[in-house]
Structure formats: structure tokens, C-alpha cells
Image (cartoon, rainbow, N blue to C red; front, side, top):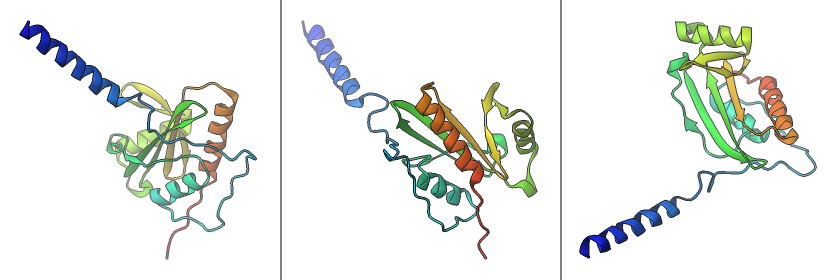
Length: 169
């Protein structure tokens, strides 16, 4: 009888702990564009750094939430962050990487050459679609095939391509 009671208590505790975790998207930031579609961008330039790019992308409503540092050395980058958020009821992931074009290692050169040639690169035996803008690389992942999500992806890619950071004096 005692074993059954202990088992029941443990089962209830496990169920309660699982319920407390909630869904994987619970608490994830949501990106919501203005209803009129007008996004106001500052005329002030951003520094030509990964942080400057992230600020620019956030202001352009391409990303939201807090960045998580990525393991960037595997692709030869000098820095990388990931943003995960909800857009249009779908989980979106945007990864931004910076490369030192004057000091590329073999992995970095391979990665950038592949993206230039094919629009994708191989990491862990997977082909990963990416967009390149000078020393920056972006990976945009959204499994939604909805028209709004596809339009947002295209808008974000163009915003990324339009980034031209200035070099501080």
C-alpha cells in the first residue's frame, strides 16, 4: 500500500512539473507589425558591427526578443547570435553571423564561398539556406508557408541586404 501511495505521489509531482513547463512557445516574444505596414526607420546609421546589425534589424521589425549567442566558430565566423520569436502563429528563428574577411580560416572561406555560389552552406551534413551581405550572414527559418510569412521573410532578407553599417572614427 505504501509503495502505491509513493508511486501515486511521484506521478502527481511529475505531472505537475510537466504542466508548469507549459508549451515550448509560451513566453516566447511575438513580433507584430503595425497594421498600416509602415515601419519607421531612424536615419541615423548603425556601427558596422554585429551589434549594430542587430539594432538595425530590431528597429526594422525583423527580429525581437533577446539574442542567444551561437556557436559560430564551426563556420569560421567571429560572432553569431540567434533570435527566436513568434510571427503569424509560427516560430521564427533568425541567426546573424559576422566574419572577419581579412582573416578568414578555411571553414569561413568555405562557408562564404558556398553561400555566394549556391545560397546555402553545409553544417553537420545539412544544407542551410543563407543570405550574405559583405561580412554578415543571415539564416532565416520559418516553417510557415502562409503568404504573410513568406512576404515577411522576403522583407527581412531585403532589410538585411540593405544594411550598410558605418565605420566609427
